[in-house]
Image (cartoon, rainbow, N blue to C red):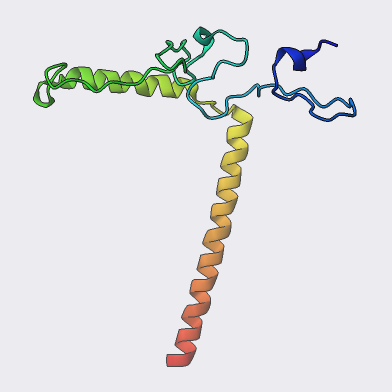
Length: 145
């Protein structure tokens, strides 16, 4: 009898002697919080994807599919005093625009309803604090005077 459990190796195989079947173990469809998706049984290691950048991860000596970051040598790249401030500001503005493109902006109906909720809550809090202030003021005048 050939099924997915036979192809997947021992993962999820049923060890009971009564011949009953168990659920097939599959890998999750969503990322598990790890930076790379590890190659499953039977997959090529080169198919690992770096979830942070969305690019394929290059295989390394240990075959994990993730490359270790190496520290820059002291002589490489611009030193602390040689950074270009214009390039820094330009890069920052490009990143701000990229983040603003990811924002899900509310439509007009949502904006009106959110604004009304805020204004009603604000009016309630002003009335509550004003009432407490008036009551405490009257109480202090009654006690002291």
